[in-house]
Length: 135
Image (cartoon, rainbow, N blue to C red; front, side, top):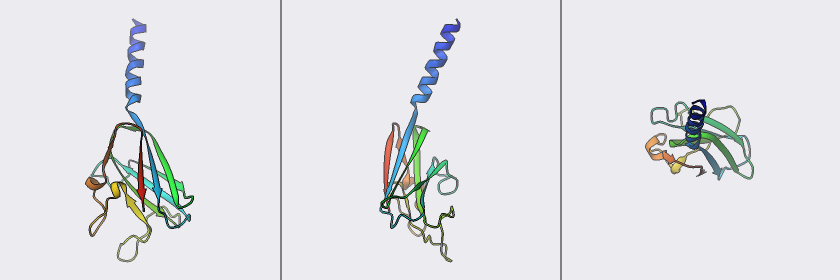
């Protein structure tokens, strides 16, 4: 009986781990190698650009940066990224609230008179994937 329970638990665990994926985000077109690139991963419309699900930072080399999110549940996500040139941990803005550091989103989503929408930036992943974002 113990053997059957152990095998069942191992089978369920293997199914759960099989649903986890790796997402690599490659950012290119940065204007220089100063600072870092911050990449925010979002998993819902309600949190998009408000609270990241996960976030990573990367050094910049040859105007490019790469980050990898491991062990993500398969599903729907969106990405927002910015070039934190002064490494202060935030997207700097001018006195009118307009960003003064480069930023971009997945699917090349652009906002009209404001930030991009989650619906324009979202994508689904069901297996290990790579998303490329160009500034």
